[in-house]
Image 1 (cartoon, one colour):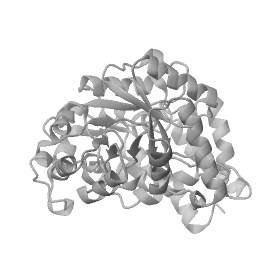
Image 2: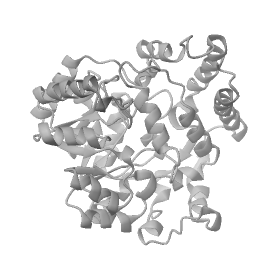
Image 3: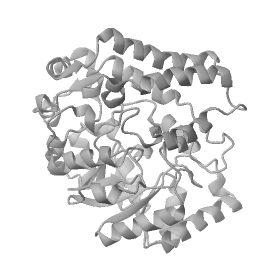
Image 4: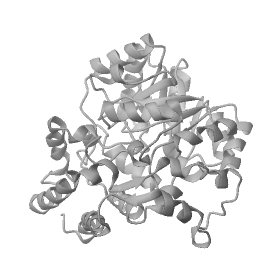
Length: 402
């Protein structure tokens, strides 16, 4: 089982990362014809020439490169003359660069690629939410080579993972280190938000104020046991997935600095990490590229758009969120320390099929949380930060930002 890891387009990327267990790299422009899974403001701008350089360097190192065209909505432009021509133009560019594979969410885009660019390997994005072998077979019938299974739905359902592997001929991939709610009801909605927030020439102007992020983060971090219930896979537990038939483990986050990515890749390459599990999950500041000064102020332009938002009210909120960004314990680990080694054996319960999915009737995760999780700051201070996240969401709901 090999790793699939993100590129961040940073100059030090190839010098600092251990690629010994990596098979494939993935990435995209921060704004594209078909948007992707992250808002434009969170990613540095990159020229096409640099994309070409990264693809060539990957090939020199024996690595494949997968380009993301995985936005979940293209405003129906794929069924217009202009949209279709633009899709073909993008695919021509990727073909000229000898990109190995494309990740897609839209079936029509996938069929366009299979019909006109058969040399590309196609990965079906996690955003289409493949959580059963029936869905997997649909994408296989269209010609998919690799399926990203729905990590929020079945990362702990080994029976379903095995069924997908047994009943399809596709390679299987899942994401290991995203801290998303178990069975998150907002995944598809959040994907649409991100698609438009990174779509070229979208009417929104790539405006970003992420209701879904604030909602999810507040829910998880207000009750940290939810992190253990989430889809996160520890490096020590990869062998369960290998045995279930998973071919590749995908790591995030392409919005992170190279040093942060190097640490994450190292942990999953060695299949062991002695320290805070939160080190393997992206934080809000220290480990994110867009919080470097040269990117942070560029990102502000995506938020402070007078035609979209009340600048005075937004500025006050941005300042409050910026203060949180500068709080060291929250920046680095959301104020939490989760002793990774104290979670040894945690996944056995799920691997044996004992989880009945009703957390109100079970205290298994709570027992591990009690021994593995502690706060790095007084609980009152952490709760103050949570109130700031709640305030951001409430200002949107009440219309106070507009």
